[in-house]
Amino acid sequence: MKVLVINCGSSSLKYQILDMSTESLLAKGLVERIGMDGSVLTHQKIGLDEKNVVEATMNDHKEAISQVITVLADPVFGVVKSMADIGAVGHRVVHAGEKYSASVIINEDVIEALEECIELAPLHNPPNLLGIAACREIMPKTPQIAVFDTAFHQTMPPESYMYAIPYEYYEKYSIRRYGFHGTSHKYVADRAAYMLGVSIDDLKIITCHLGNGASVSAIKRGKCIDTSMGFTPLAGLAMGTRSGSVDPAIIQFIAEKEKRSIDGVLEILNKKSGMLGVSGVSSDFRDLEEAVKDGNERAALALQVFAHRVRYYIGAYMAEMNGLDALVFTAGVGENDTGMRDVICAELGNLGIKLDPVKNRVRGREAIISRDDSRVAIMMIPTNEELVIARDTYSLANKKIGLSRGV
Ligand code: AMP
Image (cartoon, rainbow, N blue to C red):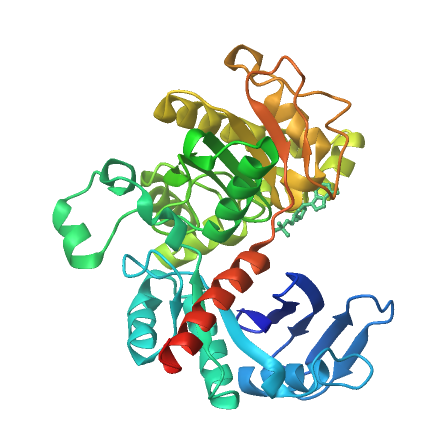
C-alpha cells in the first residue's frame, strides 16, 4: 500500500509518500504560500536529482492538495498511476486534548472532537483540519487517519500533568500539561531500544528533541512519564524564538512596562524570545555559532542558556525515573550540532553520562556516541515523524479495509 503523509500549516503543506511494503520513501515535497501570491510546490521524486517546481495559483488547501495529487501522478516526477493508487492518507494533527491517546480513523466524531480542541491549539489545529477536509473532499473513498503530537504523552501520571492551580480549571477548561513532538519522542525511543538490543520495557530513556521547537521527554518502560512542553508548546526549554518556561508574573510586568496587551506579550514570548531574543542575532544555531566565532558574547550566552535548560531537564528526569539507561539526541540541533551535544554532556560525568568526542563527530546516521565506560548510552538518532505517521496510517487503514470486508 502507498501511504500519503500530510502535515498542514496555515500557509504551507509538507507531504511524503511511502511504499509500506518496504517502508521506503518514494517522493516528498512542500507547498508554500498557500492563499497568497506566488504559491509554489517543490516536489522531489527519490532517486531523481532534478526537483519539480510548480508555480500555480493555490487559493486554499484544497487547491494545494489537488496540485500535490497531480504531481504525484506525473509521468516523469510521479510515483503513482492515479489517485486510486494512494491506499490511505495520514494527517499530522497537533492537539487531541485528552480525547485520544492513539491514532484514529477520521470520521465525523473525530472532526468534532478536533474542532473542540481548536482553543487549545489555535495556530495549529485549524490548518490541520483544513488539510483533512480537503483530502476527504478530493479522495472521499480513501481512508484518512489522524496521528497526534499529544497522543504519546497521554501516559503521563496526574502528578506530572497537573498544574498546581485550582482543580476546577482542569475540570472546566482542560488546563493541564499535554506535551508535543510525541511522534518524534516515540520513534527515537523505539529505535534506541532496537539499537541497544534491549526490550523497551526494561529501559529508562530521556529523549531530547532539539529543533527550532524543542522538548525533552522521560520514557520509562516505553511509556512517557514526563515531558517539558505543557498546556502549549511555549513551555519548557528555551527554543529558537520561544522563551520556554518563565515566571508567569513576568507577563504582567512586561505588559505594564512595555504598554502591551497579554496577547502582545505572548507574541513576544513565542516569536521574539529564545535564542533570537537573548542573542539579538538569529534563532538559527548555525548563525549563533558563527557569531560566537566573531566574539559575540550574547550569542554565546544564548547557547549557554539553551544547554543549561537541557541539562536541567536531564537531571530532573533522571531523578523522576531513579536512573537512566539511554540519552537520545534528535531533530535539527540534536542531530547536527556536535558542539551543542558536547556542551550539554560536558558536566554530567558524575551522573554516568560520558560523551566520546570522536564518536560524537557524527551527522545524518544513527550512532552510539558515548564512551565505553559511560554508564548511560548516549545516542544520536535522526527522527522520522513521517514514518511513525505512515505506520499508524497503514495499520489503521488495513483494519478499516478488513472490517469493511467483514474480516
Ligand atoms: P528542526 O526544527 O528540527 O528542523 O531544526 C531546525 C534547526 O536546526 C535550525 O534552526 C538550526 O538551528 C538547527 N540546525 C540545523 N542544522 C544545523 C547544523 N549543522 N548545526 C547547528 N544547528 C543546526
